[in-house]
Amino acid sequence: MAHEDIRALTFDIFGTVVDWYGSIAAEVARIGLPVDGGRLALDWRAGYQPAMQEVRAGALPWTSIDGLHRRILERVLAAHRLALPAADAAALNRVWHRLDPWPDSAPGLARLKRRFITATLSNGNLSLLVNLARHGGLPFDCVLSAELFAHYKPDPEVYLGAARLLDLAPSQVMMVAAHPADLRAAAACGLRTALVPRPRERGPGGAMEPWREGEFDLVADDFIALADRLGA
Amino acid sequence: MAHEDIRALTFDIFGTVVDWYGSIAAEVARIGLPVDGGRLALDWRAGYQPAMQEVRAGALPWTSIDGLHRRILERVLAAHRLALPAADAAALNRVWHRLDPWPDSAPGLARLKRRFITATLSNGNLSLLVNLARHGGLPFDCVLSAELFAHYKPDPEVYLGAARLLDLAPSQVMMVAAHPADLRAAAACGLRTALVPRPRERGPGGAMEPWREGEFDLVADDFIALADRLGA
Image (cartoon, rainbow over all chains, first blue to last red; front, top):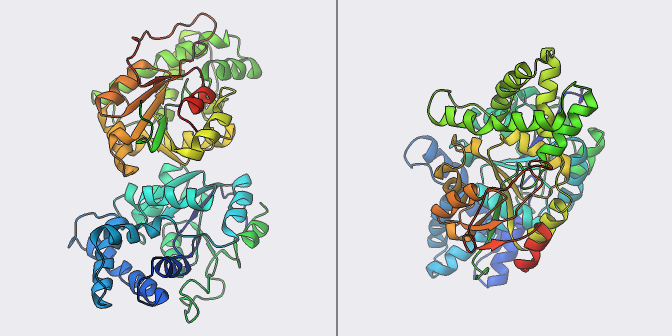
């Protein structure tokens, strides 16, 4: 692949840059909730796509991920028969603002930033992404969020909106994600694609979404390998 | 002033963080245009407020600062009886993407970032601001631009939009600028204000817009002094 044309890398965040499963499990243990933290993390995350679909379908008005996470949390707590005071539930909801990055994320981004514009491109709201970047020391050049386009990935408005704001052609932007579906939607908009599989995203028993050999421009084991492959 | 409530600092860019006058004068000399570079910089910048007013009044559709700068440049070149091939004019227009910061900007921002969320809040388009931050090594946590709100400062949509995206009350955000008019508009939206006078903004003969003692929450000579005053 010719990398010379690529000017910017846009990064999926949850699962690709940060470890939501491990971070939430650790938070649940820290606050002493009587539930398996990994189970709660998986249940919480499982509500994510359906909640965005409610927004996409117009059943819910535009609602930030903070708002969607909170709605899902209420349901998950009820399903686990856990009662939590509102202030404690609000504090737990903020765990998504302080998820820990994978070990290679910050050093890999620092290398990639030397050669490419690096931007988040996440369904997380802007304030959440700013807090995650500060928490993890993630050196993004700019924070782009679905919130800016009032559309959630994989809607094309998000990928095309990012290219437009960066004043680049879609083909000058490479989407980096651990999720084949995200990359397929980006490719359909003309972006380049790099898969960074994160087999531990869903914890010990988790499985990756399948993908086909050659389906993406690049597949790299982590952000250091990605920097190697892109000559950064 | 109680600084404890302030969570984010939003920065005006042209003149406050970067030296447009000196950078443009140097570029004009570098490319050998037969004109006084400082004069051309002042004339170019003088077209800026009227051009934004055309957008505000609806005489022009939403046009990015790159687009406005280019329109103004054509007029300025004509006024100076300078003919420039289109590609050279386009390249000169990009000087606004590589303006040099004032010497205190990057080190001051690095200190301020330790305690506060730091964001641009400029009329410059997002891609321009990303390029400026990369050029000057300016460690902003996020890049906010008038472009995100399709309104130019001093329209209230810009200040209120920034607070909304940061998920903060206006009173938790402090606008930092060298321009009293920018700060007055921010204060009218409920933001806190810090004036950092840049007496050299318009070159040797330039004058600052006047302001009244006590009009702003803080007045600091540069970003290092601002960090001192804010305990960062």
